[in-house]
Length: 148
Image 1 (cartoon, one colour):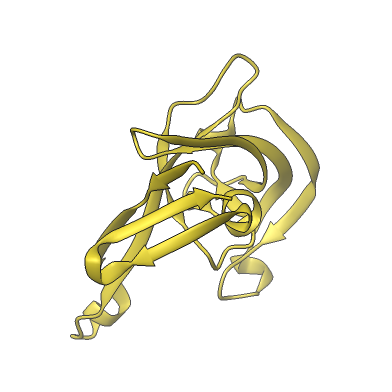
Image 2: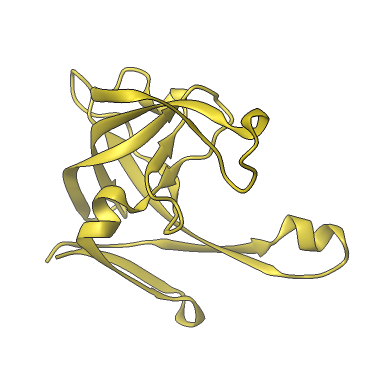
């Protein structure tokens, strides 16, 4: 079964740190590429987010990508107010993940192609994570994603 290593990145959690408490924020990263009409985008890092049902990509990532639009939607995180939501195109794209040595995919995934450039790059559950086995051992500094 193909497998890649994910990067574990630790840092201060800014909200807690701003009030004088040290809370460690732990994030998982993978490098991804999206199919275009003429090939593939270069690989870029994205947060692997098990809380995101669908991947999120800002315009610098998806402009020029080959995608099948499914419809315009509004997405948001913690705050569900309309003023906190972002416009996005729900689409199907072909995506690949790498750790620099091995690659997973390409496979078709659902993604929100957001309209604002300051949106995060997130790998959500739809696609790789729902079809694979995610193993995370933060204490040992090891995380892998294996396709089943």
